[in-house]
Image (cartoon, rainbow, N blue to C red; front, side, top):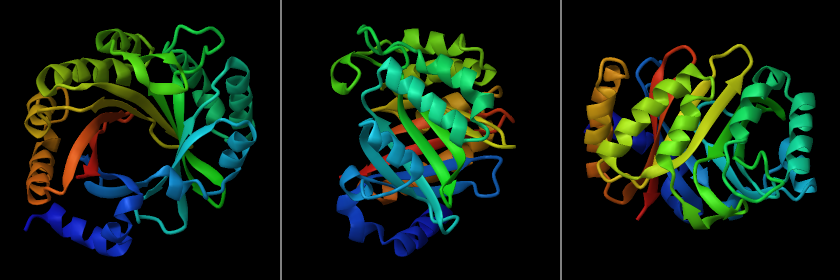
Length: 290
């Protein structure tokens, strides 16, 4: 039995995963070569389970009718810590400016990241006027006693007819979005974009979204997500094994592949390749129950 399988069984027992299977959107597996915790499991709960959650940011967005979806995330690492991903709607210019002002007032480290967040949120996802910042479509956080310690921003990487209708009349423009990310001014996105282009050619699938994580006094994290890949683990090992990327992750990738074959009730719907401003690479996998 491999070490990931041992960790998985412990996680299942602690989280009662299978007892709550109907409430869960994704089982996440994160691997990182430079971390003291190289493998981490997470549960992403669906909206019907998560929408009862309360937090000042959730309350604020609710007052503006900007909540499309709420995901409660559990990783079991720090008891009492709240983790949420919030799908945004009504992302008009006025609403987004109001949101940026709220974050500036409530999140001490936001101002250091604001220029980058605003620039990435302007990645165009619709031809409609009045939605200049609609690229920012999910806002996540890790909080302790309502204080936001980590702010997570996710940016849509597909064109859609209406920014609140994300799964109809969409257009894939993977190379265009990768070029935009590469030119965003982030050296991390420049390297990730090059890596993601190789991954798309080897693994298949399409771009899903990009992400940035910010925290006071910690390295920022940059992420590119690929959805519906066909060749996952071998493809990732082939690309990330290059010397300029993350060859240190190769053994972990093979362990996750072994875990996948031992647990056919789960299917990987997508993954994110991640790079911190300190140069640490990681991969996050998102598994659905089948």
